[in-house]
Length: 332
Ligand code: GYE
Image 1 (cartoon, helix red, strand yellow):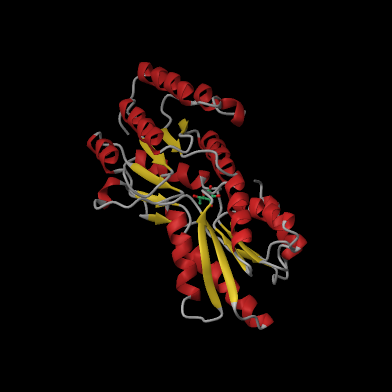
Image 2 (cartoon, protein in one colour):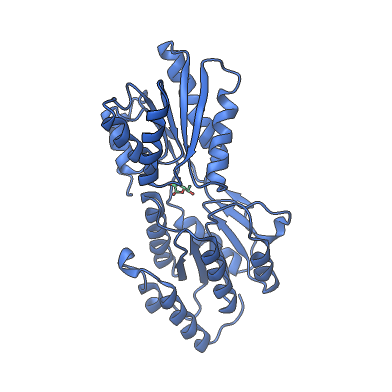
């Protein structure tokens, strides 16, 4: 770890406080700075926004994990803008943090700022989402879900459902996440890879709801108006699904029965609807990445190697599960 002066530590703490754009939304943001020890690892974290319960759960988990691990956290929320993430990363470089971690809102456009971090000798950890770059040395590792596998799980559930119930001629609509984000790309790809070539299934439309509940509702309303027959909704996150379910019910249809609903994430509200029969399958994507991030940040600060990819263990919850009513509280 590079030596740091007390003056720099004080400056870093001041910057961190300035970076905390909306502490009231967290209610717990600045304490890390007060309790941080002089020799603590300094981690700059750029969160991409506030678009979903998943994201809020993820931010809280990271802040609590930093506290537990004694890591000093400079946390910035980019309000859904890549340029804000780039600015935050530049601030972290200017303050010579030990490690930078960030959740990239989209896949492309990071090379310049990551080259700056590399030139400054600061290791960068990708969390939650991936980037596309020609230079893999621009980041040291990724911790987050396997989105392709999530898409495949969604497809496998649909096949199981059709097999068990003898369903054919299923018209599918897809609500995709933020365009050009890695979960949007790969959840779509994994799903297609599994159902492709099976004549029982046809994706009739894909619309991006940007991972937002409000847009999920709007998109579903417009698809219900334009298509006479919709049998399946595959939605890339729970927030959009919750909005879409409102639209389905307002149209006088029964979610989970008239339309098979497959969603990704696993927030409590979605699990509740699965238990009520309004959702048929929830593919888990955990936001609880904080402890792993802190462990990896400490290793990086100590100059140790870390795995290139760390995927948390995840499952799918479906209407066919025997333990459907015993799913432990999700915590977000
Ligand atoms: O599924 C969604 C969130 O990047 C995995 O982003 C994350 C996704 C998550 O807004 O709810």
